[in-house]
Length: 455
Ligand code: UD1
Image (cartoon, rainbow, N blue to C red; front, side, top):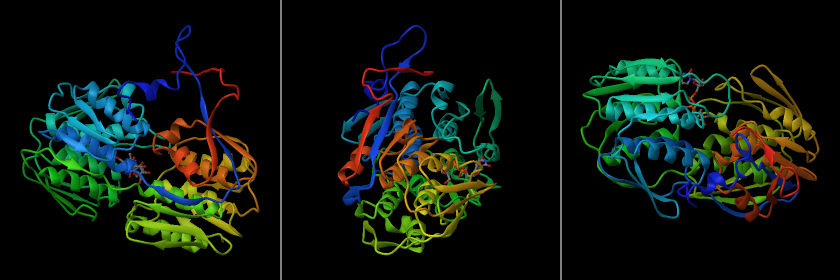
C-alpha cells in the first residue's frame, strides 16, 4: 500500500510512453460466477467521509493523523492534490497517514487533478476557510447527470465570499468570512459539508438549514470538533457552527463505509451465500437492511457486524432512492441487480440523480429483463443471469456488475474497472476471501497486449 507515494499504484497500469501520449494496459475483472459466498469480510473506512476529512486537514493548524485511510484511487488523487499545494504527507504504517498542511502556499487545485473526482470540490470550502481564497477547477467524478455546485456557492456567498468562474476554474475569495444563515434549496451532501468547512473558522455563528443528514456528514463534524471546532446538529436538518480561531492536531479513525458494506450484503444475497460483514455500524445500514428484508433476504444485526443469507425465494419490490435516512442512491445499482433475479416485478425510482441507470443496458447483456423508463427502472425477475463482457460506467454501476458476475452462469469480464477502484479497497481480494472465483485480467486476454487510450 502506498497511495502513490512512489507513484506505483498510478504507474502499475501504464506501459512506457510511445509516440505521443500514454499507452495503457487496460485491466478488467474476470469472474466465474455461481459460487455462494461464505465467510467474513472486513469493511474499510467510508470513502465519502475520508475524502472531505482529507480536504479538512487543510484547516488544521497542526499535523493530523488519520488511522484507517482506505487504499482507493480517489484518496490517492486527494493526497496528490494536497501534495501539489505544498502539504507534507507521510505514510506512518498500513492505512495510517499523517497530514501536515501548514506549508501549503498555493490554494489552487488545477484541472488535471480536479477532473479526476467530484470530491475535489471540498477543497473549495477548506481552502476558502483557511486562506479566504481558493481556485479549484470545476470537478469531475462519476457521470450521474448534471451535478451543479450552485448550493456550495450559495453558502460561500452567504459567508461573505465572492465567486467567479475563470478558465474553467471556480475562484472564491473573501476579505473576511462572517457567520450567516444558509438555507439549501436542495438537500445536498456536498454543499452541506463544504459549507461546514468554510464556516468552521469564520467569525461568529453560521446556521445551515435544510441540510443533508448522511452519516459521513456527522463524521466530518466529529472530526472537526475533535480538532477544536464548535459544530452542533450534524445529522439533523439544522447545523450550527460557531467559528473558532485554531484547530489542533489529532488522531482520528473514520467511520466504516455503509455502501461497501451494502455491496457485500447484496453480493451474499444474490449468490445464495451466507456471510458476516464486519466493521459496520448497523444503524447506518438501516435502510439497506430493511430493503433487503423486504426482498426476502435474512439480515441478522450484531454490535458491529451483520450476517446476511437467504432462506426463501427473493421477491420483487418497489423502491425509491432518497437522501438519508432514505434508501441511498449509491446502493441503487446493486439492489436493482439483485432484483433482476427476484421473482415478479420491481420498480426502482431514482430521486437523487438524473442519470444513474447506465448499468441497465450492461445487465441486459447478461440476460436481465430491465428497462429504463424516465426516472425509474422496470425489472422482471429472470431465473438466471449469464456471464458476458460488460463495462462499468461509474463506480457503483461497476459494483453492480461485479455482483451480477458473481451470480451469473459462466464468465463475466468487466472493463473500465478504474471506476471501481475509485471507491472499493481490494474488492477482488475481499471477494476471493469469501470464496468467489474472481481475478484481475487484461484486455485482450494475452498479457503483453497494450491498448492505446487517452492518458
Ligand atoms: C455525494 C456522494 C455520492 C452520493 C451523493 C448522494 C461524495 C464524494 N459523493 O455526492 O457518492 O451519491 O452524495 O448521497 O460524497 N445538487 C444541486 N446543487 C448543488 C449540489 C447538489 O442541485 O450545489 C443536486 C445534485 O445534482 C443531486 C442532488 O443535489 O441531484 C444531491 O447531490 P449531493 O448530495 O450534493 O451529491 P454529491 O455531494 O455530489
